[in-house]
Image 1 (cartoon, rainbow, N blue to C red):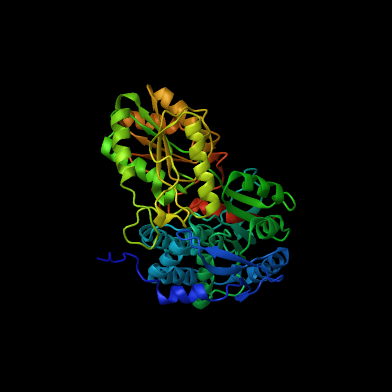
Image 2 (image 1 turned 90 degrees about the horizontal axis):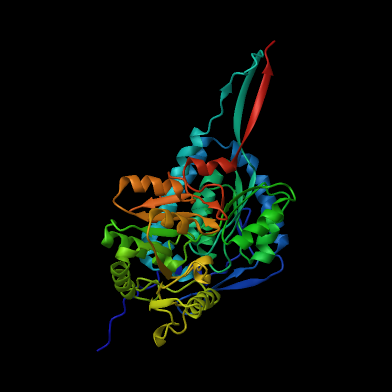
Length: 500
């Protein structure tokens, strides 16, 4: 008897979008790359090509930046209520197309529809609505000179100008909202470069913005790889700010490129986040929270709490429960209803993660779950990695020092609060962290001592459009989300008027 498929049919509008020619979106229209190059877009679940997109070069970057520069004064001076109305309409349109964008994201990135359609798309929509509200609330100040001068002094809050936004492949659509929301609300125009692995949702979003009525040139989307498209954008002398989310090595290159015209920068870089499970923790809650912290989005999260430090007295019970939870994972294509973990984004990423897993075994770690390449022949053509749980890890192992960006957890132990804090801080990164305890005093002491931009207590990975998020140390600088995220997209002008 045939087993009925759990895979929903691809929506007609999604298939139509995949089948069309995908040019660069510059000055309100789609156009081929100046040199005619294209890139293949693959379905990570099968390795098959699902679309082709234009491959931008420096000539196209110049055109996109020129369009953004020409459009910026008009966008900045457009009535705040008119800008807010467009942003709000964009949020509503995304909500109405959650299934469409969710399917497109799952096909492009590999993540299950339960994440893309139910989480990523609604959160992206809420970002545009949230920042629509800030447009009418940007205010300067009237100031009194401390020296008693007979002067009228006030400040104006003005947009930076043209923003180059370079986004990663792990949350393609959501990252569009992270960058475009505050940048547009502040009155800037944007040249957006999505990751070459996952460009489709950014292109579909650009088309939707044109349908809604955003002026030409306000948002431009250039698809292409890092050297040919990203690097010229980062170094462009007519770009006033770069906002980047991605790996540290690329972030360092962007810092170097920014010196040409002293660009403003916002960098959200890597993480190697700790999760501390104390002896008094609610064990079931800590296990479920840790599972989500490590394996959500196939582990392809910069906040992944994969360095798990557990008090020695509960170590065995914690590992047994977490191992059982990991064994329940169902690998499969993102569009399959029963899939709980999809493939990684590319063959390159799959091979990199498998190599790091192998290094853990070579250096003496024990794989309680996983630890070997996927053997299911039904998944052989996709970019899948077995969810893996390591114990017997030491701080010097590669898997404990290097960001893995895959479904891999490392469990170690501690004896005292002080040791737990030291282990948590023993990393170059400082993006996020988790604490599991019922002790209120310990909560505050440990949260204060951890050197990370976010500390979650008895939960993990919570985000809200109104709450700022960003890292310390090598995890970058600047904030995403909330009012604080708008600051890097604004600059203050001070006006002095002599009243004498």
